[in-house]
Image 1 (spheres, rainbow, N blue to C red):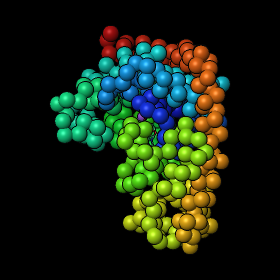
Image 2: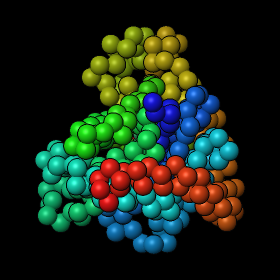
Image 3: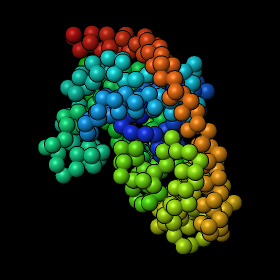
Image 4: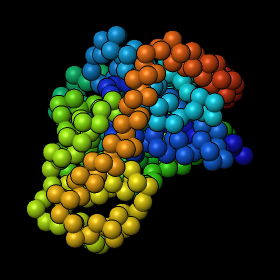
Amino acid sequence: KFTPRVFSGIQPSGGLTLGNYLGAIKRFVSMQDEDYETVYCMVDMHAITAKFLDPKTLAHNTRELAAGFIASGVSPEKSILINQSQVPEHAQLAWIFNCVARMGWMGRMTQWKDKAGKNAEAASLGLFAYPALMAADILIYHATHVPVGDDQKQHLELTRDIAAKFNHDYGVDFFPITEPVIEGAATRVMSLRDGSKKMSKSDPSDASRINMTDDADAIAKKIRKAKTDPDALPSEVEGLEGRPDARNLVNIYAALNEQSIEEVLRDVGGQQFGTFKPALAELAVAKLAPISTEMARLMAEPDEIDRILKRGSEQAREITAPILKKTYEIVGM
Ligand code: ADP
Ligand code: NA
């Protein structure tokens, strides 16, 4: 009954990382050519939930993120590309969902607990309500599939809970129960200096993180410096157990080279990191440096980016305005 439609978003909270690229954007690109309508979003309203962002930085990050999407292969011809705040139905539906979601559900979100830290009293109300806005981002399109990294699994379960509760409370079958698409060898890229921590653009203190704006030298250097262990690479996946840093580099290699982890280990099993790291650096530079070059070219034409996003928001509102109208009717507004 629902059109197969993909929605996903990334926060312009900082520069894009290799984690965003491998965990999300690569899949955004491949889904464009499958049987889905695809909508991809810079979620600027999410980017102001955690800490104060000065307006120039937010505007810059949003353009740069759009440039990153396009340079990575998201095509404004094949996909609707938008900035969240330009499509007001996201926020309008979010209010309804704030009244559907329960405080207890939100309080159980691990990302809320991590980001609010010990001082939840000082966190913004927006940070607490973030997952309800995310549910609205997805469901205002009646999206059926959401490609994301592994860290978004719990938020997508909440999105399903909100859709189900709305449908149940109002006795309708109006919002789809969305499927997460969490696939590939690198659904959770870890920090290159600590394999137990996620690589995140929202953690500026991690200098080891690979940014999508890094040039060839910076990429190669960060991979050379990545933390490893003294053992050779195994030829079977079990041999990566208890070796988070080794596993992370193998995952990155597999995802960049579009291979399975098993295939990679069949080739590199027995190698020392002294051999594997230069191969990984060469692969990463070959795949990523052209993207950063293209991002820089696009960033030199900010008006062109703004024009693409404006057109995207017009296309988006053809979908979102009728869905909001129908939602209001269901609610009695
Ligand atoms: P960040 O944590 O870098 O600020 P966002 O919250 O904006 O990222 O998430 C954007 C997308 O990138 C989401 O689909 C998320 O799951 C994915 N993602 C973020 N970090 C990683 C990572 N380290 N590995 C894989 N996917 C990631
Ligand atoms: Na997100």
